[in-house]
Structure formats: C-alpha cells, structure tokens
Image (cartoon, rainbow, N blue to C red; front, side, top):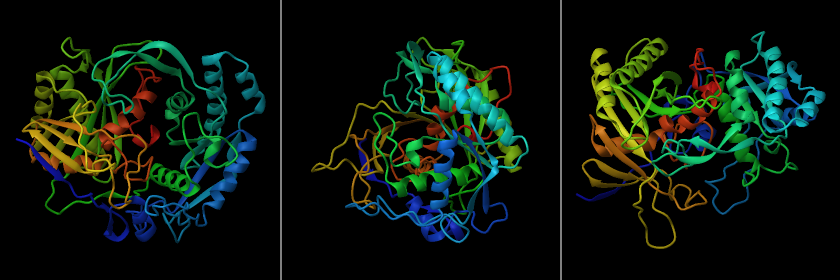
Length: 483
C-alpha cells in the first residue's frame, strides 16, 4: 500500500468568522478571531522591566508599531508582508499601553555585580535582580503582560549532561538518549520558572528585536522589522488572553481536546523523568498538567508511563479541561513523540472509558524518519505532501514549498514527520490534515513553516521551564506563562 496525496492548506478563522490560510493576511484583512467579543483585549497593559537604557528604546519601538511598518523589499511579497500597525482600529484592534508606574529599571549596580560572577552564578544573580523588579510591577495586578528586556549575558552550558534525544525536542532527530550539552544556567528559562508564581505571562526580548544597531544572537539572522513586529504583537495579544486565530471547525465536528505528552528531567537534581501533558482546544487555549514519574524502557531507552500513571495523567488533563470549558470533550487526541506501550494504551483507554469519551485517538509522531521525497527541480516537496507507506505508517511534510509564498520559506532541506497511529477514530488522511492544521496554532511565529503540531511544539518550551521548578510545588497551568 503506497499512496501519495497533497493535502489542502488548512484555513484559519479570523474576525467575523472570515477565513484565510495565512495568519498575517487574515489579521490584516479581518482582525483577530475574537474581534468584537466581550473578552477580547482592547487595551493591553504592559509592564516593562530591564536596564534603563534598553527600556527607553523599547518604549519608542512599541509606540512606533502603532503605525504601519513597510514590507521588506523582496521577490516574494506574500512571504514578507507589511505590518498594518497595532491600534484600536487596525491590525489586532488593541492598544499596547506602557506607563512609568508599570516600568521598573533593573539597577545597573546589580547587573555589574552579576557580570563579575562566574558562569552559572552570574545567570542566577541576574535572574534574582530581574525577579525583584518583576514582583514590584506584578504585585498590584496593574498589567496584563510583563515585557522583559533581557541583559547582554551569555547562558552557561555544562559539558556532557544527560539530555533526552527524543523526537519531541524540535532540535533533534534521533530516537535514543545520548550524552549532549544541556544549558543548565539559562536566563530565559530560569526567569520564566521563577516568575510562574507571579501569575503573569512574560515576554522576554533581546535588544536586537527593537534596536537595529544591536547584533542578533550568534548563528541567527535578523528578521525584517515588519516580521519582528508581527511576531511580537501576536504573542502579546495571545498572552493577554486574546485569540489571534483559531482552527476552522465544521458544525458536524466533535468537540475535541488535543493532548501532547512529553517528559522532562530536573536540571539541578537529574531526578527521574516526569510526565507533562499539554492540553489544547480548537481555540488554542492551552493548559499544562504535570503527571507522575516515568520509567525508562529497556527496549527503546525512552521514558514511558505505567498504566495507572497514564490513566491519572489523562484524568487530570480532562479535569482541567472541564474546569476551563465547563464540559468534557466528545473526542480526545493524544500526541506523543515515542511509541505507545501496552500499559500506556491501557491507561489512556481506561481514562477515556471512565469519563465516557466518545472517541480516542493515540498518535505517535516521529521526527526521525529516514525516508524523504523529492520533486523535479530544486524545490522541496510541497507543505502538505502526505504519503501512506502502510496502514499504520505515514509521512507528512509540515515544512516545504508553500504555493501561497511561491517559494520554500526555510533554510534547510525539510524532513517529513512520521505518523504512526496506535489507535484512531478517523482516517489517517484526516489525522494528517489535523496535524497540519495544528502546526499553524503557534503564537511565537506567523509564517507557514511550523514543523510540529502545537501539542508537541509546546513540549520543548514547557519542559525547559519546568526543569527549574520545585517538583513538590504546584505549577502554573496556563500555557501562556511558559511560552
């Protein structure tokens, strides 16, 4: 059984129920998906924390983004569109507000003192200095999002720490564990972990985001200004509780809960792997649930859950879903980057039966497929290229040439995802179309080049933050605080 198909690019829903395939064109034309709704954020109060010299420039750039920013001069205008501006009557139909009261300078003295410390201590001292100012801004509940201008500080990497080389890590391709450098002292992740207690989402920026004279991070190229404005404002809108876009649903579709499962290991203790579930609905509302301890399988050297732990994790996820949406879903889709063991399948099915879930899909999504497809000429396969190798083995290109852009938007040769359903309630083609659509629910970017569905895309972000958290303490459940 060999079958090749090109799936349609999924449409997204924007203001007034209008549709478009590209997030930026959809917002520029129709506004965000929640436009006109009572709970749509029409004024986003920003708290600013960072060195004084950086905050002045950041304020000016936020103000500049009220007005349109011209598109990059490029051969492919759909790939680099203009930014329409962000104000009450254009773009996201909201205003970004900064005030002196909601701004705090991180003392230069504290940053100088931190910089004189060795490696990890320098990062931790900087985080302490920032956290003190963040607490001062957040304590009066005057802001919706905390905007952080990070210090010019290098993260510290300790040599040869044990790190997972799972497929849910978007930077890896292997399916086995190996020894790899793991950044233990990471300003971004450590600050987010320490700030979870504040109950406010953070947006951490480098100076190069708003300052054209500042070099981008090593091994990264600078995006054009309009793209930077798009990415920042979409992220801020989502973190403030807005819905920039949502998946399109037919009236006959079952209400579906999407759950991604990953595992992480504490940075300081190297404790056993802990399971975490990432839960989303069609709107993209995301919550995080921490589960029990995983056990490393001798067969594939990957962490897996015992049947009862798998059952408890899904029950916990459904409890959170019901608390957020006041109802249970009719269908649950579980995405995992390693195979489903018999125990995991048994536990997931038991939880679904206990809650009388109508349909359960268990989908193993791999990032280590050896097979690749080629087109005549130099262009990579089209995004949406779907190939069935057998009844339970499929390939899907979520990155590839995009007809709307008339070009492949990536820098490297794309590789397909592997889709291996362990249990499904719909056809494999429908599963693939759903994964393709879920790759567009990512508010850290605005182009059609997301490789992973949001269920697994969040895995790396969440576990990199959770590894700095006390395993004995409650964690924040809102995904926006990890993003």
